[in-house]
Length: 355
Picture: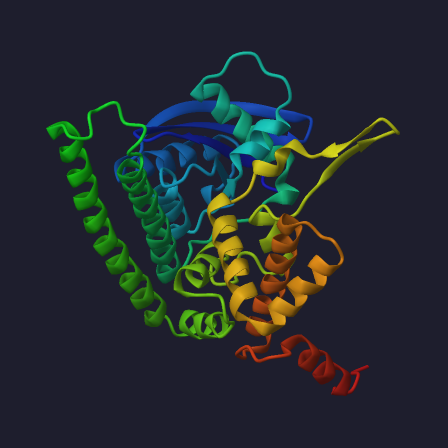
């Protein structure tokens, strides 16, 4: 158990740090608070400040636990600095920390840093130490997110071009012609950028041998293309972060949870939006494409529809099945073939049981 915990509340330009000394879960001493700039100079000052406070309790900085919320890109440089210097870093979900605090009045960065430090002190058994993603995976995720933003902008242009009956400008006016011409020009530019982005995605995938092999396995399934496969690899961190199909399905928002209490309460969990919606969209697209192009998936879909399942339920089930197939391909290091699941079952049955 780490007795020296530093809670850090990150923002774009600065970060607030509070250090505590943990005698036990019920007894924690506040050692001090400081604000630093979110720059390499600020990182060095944080390390020096932590080392100075540690000496007061005869604790080494190597034994300290730095805890912070996941805040997109604002905390990446600090995490990398601390990790490179051999220090213990814990990036925890901001929602997890927030809900663990219970009822609070007021909010400030200083108070938040103290709450994060106390959370780290009380919940060290849940600690998952930070390890930076491989460079190729980080680049792939950035490209997938960038391509998604380009696609969203292209949708806006298409909407502007298609809303001919809803514009307030006269269709014969120069204003209307300018808007249509401008939207078309922007759409053409975005089409080119999206194609270039896809080429860069493919280049990044091919630059990593393992990632390239996983990509080949995934795209051997009819219905899954470059973008779907890239999203799966990126958000699972090349299958090192999310290691099972069920966890991936849940992360994409496919799993349904319920709230039950007594005989009167039975309803869906309101936390259904706590997921990666972008990944969920890509997986649904892959499921719809696989139903059209993959005989095995088409047969499975028809079977579900014959049982009277709604279309939305069918898509969810197909998505789950695709993920289980993908993870099976990665585990067995093989490409997809018709009747993949039955062949894997026969192979397992043929293997002798090892005592």
